[in-house]
Amino acid sequence: MKIGFIGLGNMGRHMARHIIQAGYEVIVHDLDELAAEEHLELGAEWAKNPAELAAQSQLIFTSLPGPKEVETVAFGEKGLAEGIKPDTTYVDLSTNSPALSKKLHQDFERLSVEMLDAPVSGGTTGAKDGTLAVLVGGTPEKFELIKEVLATFGDPSRVLHLGSIGSGNIAKLSHNLVSITSGMVLAEAMSLGVKAGVNPAALLEAIQGGAFGRGGAVHFAVPNIVLPGKFDDVQFALELARKDLRLALDLARDVNVPARFCAAAEQEATEGINDGYGKLDQTAAFLVQERRTGVEVRRSE
Ligand code: NAD
Image 1 (cartoon, rainbow, N blue to C red):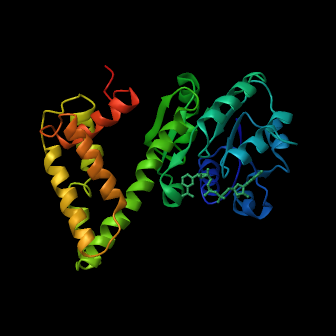
Image 2: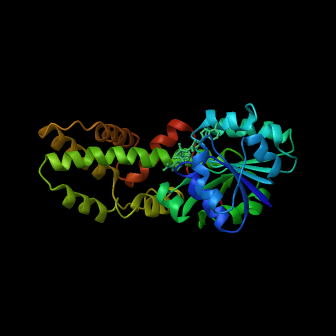
Image 3: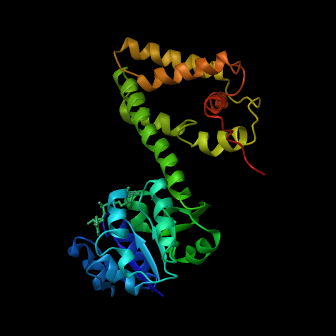
């Protein structure tokens, strides 16, 4: 099986290298031919455009900046669609719009090509080490067929099938919402702590050693309280959580630190208390958002 790989940037160059080093025959393409230097040295072939690459590949990967580039590479001039053969599998590793993944899936279906979305997580270090999380949307049958190739650059225990086409990107965007906003919340929290007088390195150590730093929310609270819906299994009551948010807001006012995330969280907790959840676990914040959205975040049996 020959594998085509397009997009040899900060992430793609490592992923393509792992596929080559696992012994697969690989053909590569990028707008920047120099990006392929290491791959050609390792024995990969060069294609001068996506159509030429597609004509020779049974499995094709793209790792491109975003929706615009993916659409161009797929259906633009000399794009994949101009060369691709029936029964080829196309996997987009870019972080992309789930709606575009679904649309491209339909367009490729007319060419008898099955597409999967498989955005990755773990940064350039994960890409370099071959330990990425790979979040896959597509049919379970195709997922099983390509899993081995994905595991050349992903940690096998983190190569996950999330559901039908688009699900990989839905999961990736949900993940990034948490990881990006928690970075911003950390900036707010640490600027507060430092301005109020604590040494930055000591403060970081305190945060790392606490419930948040140990991954308490995702490894304990959500699996054990939220997914089974056991909000009365109180580890830390919502009303006590709001008390701490108010204390943090008082401190922020004292030292002139804008704390907009803290203020929003205090409002959220207040809404939950008004809903009657004050004595429940602090994860009852989920119940507030569930009421507003009309979905329940529970484990399906
Ligand atoms: P990058 O900009 O470093 O690489 C993109 C590559 O695509 C470049 O080499 C560029 O020349 C090539 N390219 C762009 N348009 C092209 C076209 N029309 N035809 C052929 N090649 C083209 O980006 P990256 O950091 O490697 O990210 C790739 C994807 O992975 C993005 O969707 C990004 O959101 C996602 N991602 C990045 C990281 C990260 O830490 N960098 C982590 C996880 C996911």
